[in-house]
Length: 110
Image 1 (cartoon, rainbow, N blue to C red):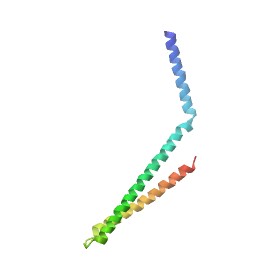
Image 2: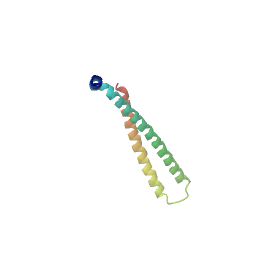
Image 3: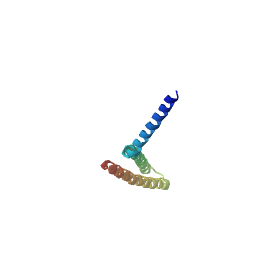
Image 4: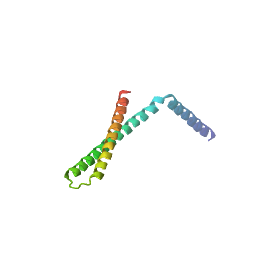
């Protein structure tokens, strides 16, 4: 009984050491999922930015239509909204360009 327990413990210790050495010596294997995960996260972020940008452009278009169809002379709030949304759209476009550039750099590196 004691011999079998000693053998089991020694097998577990040796197996653990072999697995640990395998992970320590093979660093590329650990880094590959991290890079692909970063790429996937950037890809998702890019898609979300594109959706937000499309939504903001639709709001902008709607606001501009409201101005065209409006007979009200108090259009200052709508004009202010339009300016804010234009700034947001421009900032989103710049950020989207940066994300696309980062994705293309990640694609070019193996």
